[in-house]
Length: 198
Image (cartoon, rainbow, N blue to C red; front, side):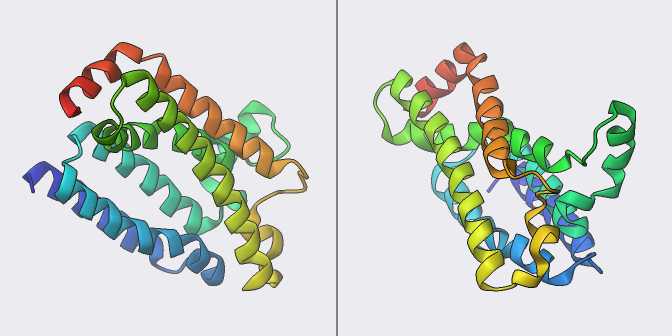
């Protein structure tokens, strides 16, 4: 594994440890990190097997670090985003919406690099990656809801972060949709990646 990859994993591990110290709601933090426990080893394994680009891993690092920040404070109460909330005149803290958008924006590249290995045509690869972003985002919302009602219903809004918005899950998925869609603007960049991976 290249040193640059080890550095990225090392930085994320440090960020994760710092954000694991004294979280605002320990049970909510644990639920938010179940997927981290599953997917961090999976990403490393995929990297060994298929060799992610440094750009893809750096994008994953940014997204994962923001997720760690959100799980430390909870997305609804991420206090460092309050400045933006007041400045923009929002009635709610939109940190969760920003991170969902960044999921679509930042995870797309790593998924595409994996998809490009298996799918034979570029258009099919980019379309399949886009549908994966939407599917993962929607499935996450369902799993988040199930985890809250099955394991810790008392956490309620603190974990789900709906902040009184009955359409919160749908809006989060739409945010991921636009994040993924933004990648398609770099059509020619992804075409070059495809030809290198294929």
